[in-house]
Image 1 (tube, rainbow, N blue to C red):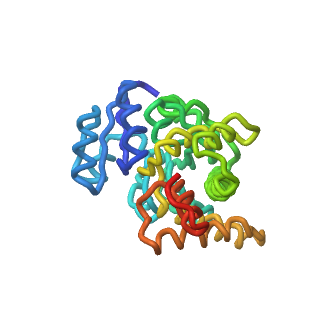
Image 2 (cartoon, rainbow, N blue to C red):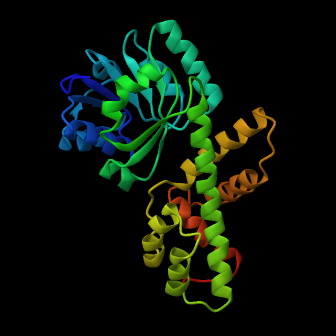
Length: 287
């Protein structure tokens, strides 16, 4: 694909904006749309042409990327001959409906959910799980490479959706596990900086865990991904598992834990604020 090919980007949220900005920075003309005028203004400052509607973004574009909180808006961005590269977290069932609608419209459709944080989006080192026609992935790969370090093709159907949900299940469980582990260590008299160092240097020091250690040291729970977003993902995970006849007690436990966080007024904190929820239930104050 020529670097001069116009691309459309729909959804300039916390992770969508840096992804779109990476494309603009790599030389693609990007027309971006978001419901929020504030997000459109931020996009303009990062080299993206802000437009007043999704239709305006799509006009003259060869490819449209969507980064949306739910699947409802995706259907509005199907245009004959304009490849849809869908990066959101949605259910396999909803994605299959999008595939049917895309086929009817003559829209090439690539499922392209991403794994990674806002920091990785800024650095262009996300991971893309891709499924759909392999030729569509190959055509989109140069653009995907602007914001991701790897693009993994998994099959012709909804495999990428299951991969994303599987990874996000591990993300949610990791956060809950960290909350309980840190509370246990504090009950045992271990200082907060010390237990964080132990975890980071131990066998459980995964990239996700290590990424969260510095915010935990600072007790900074400003959101990379919010509790409400993780709760939405867990609803999708549990729903997909039930549809597949798979018991997922850990997922259901985390679903209840995040529902309680939201009920208690912490919907917009970072999803690792579950650490604080465990501390409260254990009668622990700030370390």
